[in-house]
Amino acid sequence: MTFAEARALFPVLERIAYLNAGTVGPLAHPVAAALVDGVEADLVRGRSGIPYFEEMIGLRAELREGFAGLVRADPDTVALTTSTTEGCGIVLRGLGLEQGDEIVTTTDEHFGLLGPLGASGACVVVVEPDPERILAAVTPRTRLIAASQVLWTTGAVLPLAEIRERSGVPVLADGAQSVGAIDVRAAGLDFLTVSGQKWLCGPDTTGALVVADPDRLAVVSPSYFGQRRYEPDGAFEPQPGARRLETTWLARGTLRGLLVALGLRPDWWLERATTAAARCRELLRSRVELAEPETVATLVAFRPEGDPPELVALLHEAGVHVRDLPGRNLVRVSCGWWTSNEDLDRLVDVLDR
Image (cartoon, rainbow, N blue to C red; front, side, top):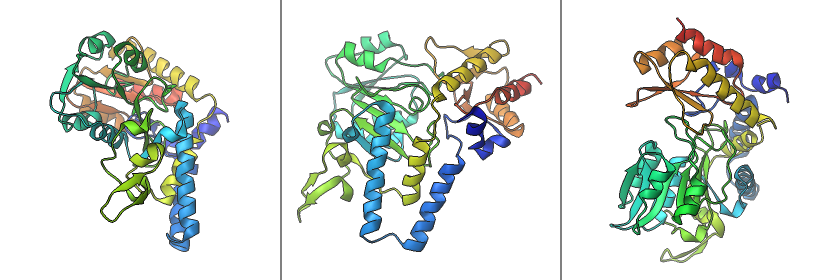
């Protein structure tokens, strides 16, 4: 697949410099077609009968294998979710945290992680997103280190597997801005959340949770398809592996569309995304105050001279889609494998006005 062919998969790119996959990625023709085909199948063939349920079970199994392949994990360690937020919640509820337990996190986390942390009942210790400060915050009461692999604010990459090895404390890695954007491996991480609709360009409300040891988490939101058998009093035997943690039934079109999205990326996706992000930084460096962490991913953040929401609105009017980060005086640019030089030129053309 050439770069031109890859761009042609996304009709939105004909009009828009789509630089906001960190929020929601662009939708490709084949993904949209799979979504529509799934709905039409439901309409014409119905949503019942043995063939229907066999297909749904098979699609879910294929998706677990697909997500496992993305992060070099065992499919038995993968649970399907609707978002990274849900994945974080499954972990925080399943750990059985108690008053007096501590969780170490950073100042630069999204509420998708912070919300489940705050509802956990544990004491949340917040430090700067620096490996040494995270490690220094660990005490005998620390039950979990929970942080993003790629910070949604500056695009900095945290070495969470290394932090896990040095601290000996279980790590929950929020992969919302990493999986699909950079090369990610689940090895060395206890828990890894994945977003389907961001960098993987899948349908809305899709994702996964990778759990190194699924037996470690209690099943606190049991679902019909998370159990093998149950008793009249509600006692149940969970499914093997991470399937026991799944809470949500996904529509046929959603499953089909997500499968297509996972197989969409060309072999050169990582090189192209990395190159695009590097060029974006180069173009912005002389124009604005650029956030430049030591280790970078495909998110590029900068502080404009004026009001960030006003600049984002101005860019939107010009067909350039980025976002501001409320309360942080930052504008964020997401560079994907579909990002062209022309997209980035359109960004800086507006800044130069």
